[in-house]
Image 1 (tube, rainbow, N blue to C red):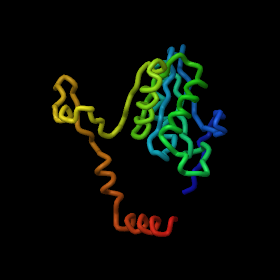
Image 2 (cartoon, rainbow, N blue to C red):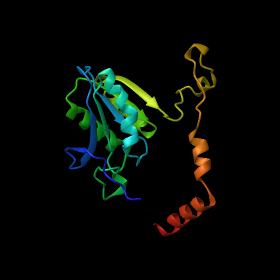
Image 3 (cartoon, one colour):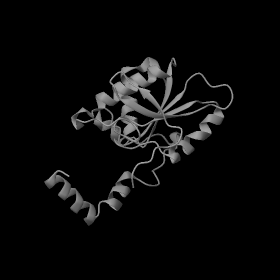
Image 4 (cartoon, rainbow, N blue to C red):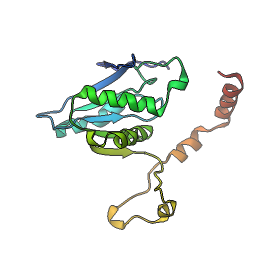
Length: 189
């Protein structure tokens, strides 16, 4: 079904000429020093009512939350040249968005692909990040790959996910999807 803009969508106009859609959830009570910036998955995901509902309880803990549609997603600007959709471009947009918040630091919540952008931003701007939360980031391997085989200590209480991307991919990668994928590849549509 066609995309429908969420009510109360606001926009940032970036120096690049793009318009980024966002939603602001105000802190209840005196706001804490650092706002939360939620970075959705994808690339190509978008902020939904469900996402905003999930984040809303954090406002009760006095956090102001910003959730934005990345370029090419949701209600934000689409680029004419798809080769311009790069991690560097997304990171540049994120840097400008953080400046627009006029906060000394931000708390980043990165979901899936948003985790990659959060890490790229934090690596380049460590002084602008108060905290970082990664949800569903995919595998994060250490530089020394032999360390990946070590088991984490029990005190971390790490649990296997209830549902994995691998299970989801298996569920949607049907004969119908394979035919559509092949058609799109052959005919460029």
